[in-house]
Length: 117
Image (cartoon, rainbow, N blue to C red; front, side, top):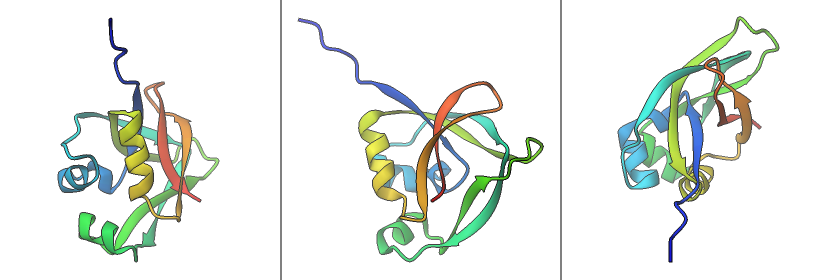
C-alpha cells in the first residue's frame, strides 16, 4: 500500500516568518526558501500585542502589506514550500490584523501571503 505524500503549499513571507527563530517556534524546523517579490503591494507596520508572537519574533512591530493598485510597488521576500499542516500553524501564528490570500508573485508563482485584514 502506498502512502500519498503530504500536500505542499507555497507561502510568501516578507516579514518575521523569514526569521529562523520564528520558523523553529512555529514549525519546529527551519524552512528553505527562494527570493521573490510581490508586485502591487505596499508595506506598513502593525503593533503586535500577542505574547506568543512577541516571544517568537522578539519584535513589537511587524511589517504588514496591503494592495496599492500600483504594479510598480513591490515587496521583497521569500517563498517557502511548506505542508498544509504548517500552513495551518502559520495561520495560528499570525495575529488578527492579517488575513491569508492567494497572490501571483513577480516570478509567476502562485503562493499564499498574509496581508492586512
